[in-house]
Image (cartoon, rainbow, N blue to C red; front, side, top):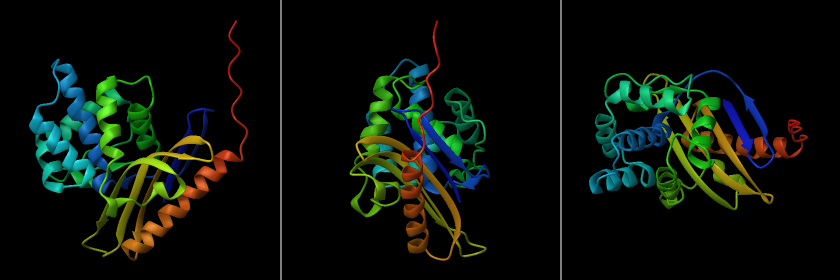
Length: 225
């Protein structure tokens, strides 16, 4: 398991685990960010088809939609180019058509969340707002993971049973409001014997990360002369 969390209001941040994990559907946020960066570079908005396909990909975690947009961004090379712009340094795009086998770190996904939710970002204001809207309106059966620690949330989850081991990859990341503050939280895991076991483990980790941040002293701001 790897965990990363940030309280943007105070700058408190924690990262546990530097190993890479298979993203499964978590990469769909990255795919959408890549699509939006490409549209920005071309000086245009998303087409109606791109918008509806992206909504299905994020809100319902539809795999066909992800495959279509993976092709639209140019597959792995397109994702890699976008990640250079976004500042993701430890994410390796999945081979060929296998977008779900992209590998990443918790720290990289925290960087992606910051690009989506912070005020300063390579993503335009309208691009960030679109991703936030989709992540805040996911299907009800996918309301698990980092949302366990929040009263309000915007998230994306990923889950995959590996064919060779039959063990589960369970991932969750998002923005949550809890204890009167805002947190960005990422939990990546693999090796769970069942999906339900993995979800419970991820939710415990999300709660633990937020509680750990709240118990630490905020960093001292730099003195500006």
